[in-house]
Length: 313
Image 1 (tube, rainbow, N blue to C red):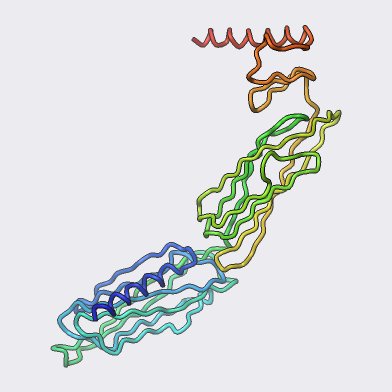
Image 2 (image 1 turned 60 degrees about the horizontal axis):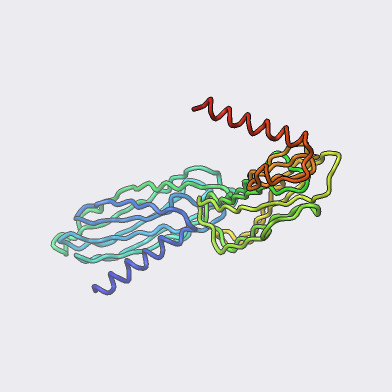
């Protein structure tokens, strides 16, 4: 008897986790004769998905119970009920019984919260022999129906780029409703732009509401340009959803490629002065070949920075 109870609890636990990554809720009710009723259901389901509601009855009273019934009904056609009745012919003192009811949200279900109704009834046996009048109770089960799982692609990029330099290209992928599996993130760039590192990234799982961040560096062609124009970058995400269906989403980002001005600051702290590049680790004394006018302008710029720091102090 003890082993059968353990197996029942494990079975119900396994049932409650197969809710397509929905968070499970529990309703507990105490009925006449110290009968504990526990109902476990998903907080939310996605339209077109199957789901399960489980029930466990524990007789903690001194007397047996019989004709225990769960009758589950749905108020509309958004949720279909399959075999919505559970029956326990007799439950002895100290005994327990569990069962499940299979349901499905229709593909054209109305989004929002729907209330299922469970009519629970039982008959108490006085001194384990004499049936007393049946008692019953209605239990409301709230189920929220959500739309198809939403997976978002967010990007963080500079407003514009220029030739012969590197720029950050950051991607964030977030799944708001479910865990997604077998994820492939691919970044496609124009032919005159290259990436430092990989452009295709694979992940076995992305957990619900846990952002995945990918940092990349794009490298522009050293060839100078005279006119500005936009370059399209496409980010695509392939994944398998909670039902095992393979899906693909994509996002296109346009970056403005413009001619480099006389002085440009790069993301790593370097400076372009005309056709000369001053790396962030190079001092003025080591620069050779920069025109006197450019060097003078740079010196003034650095002196202005020092004066600003002194004023702040």
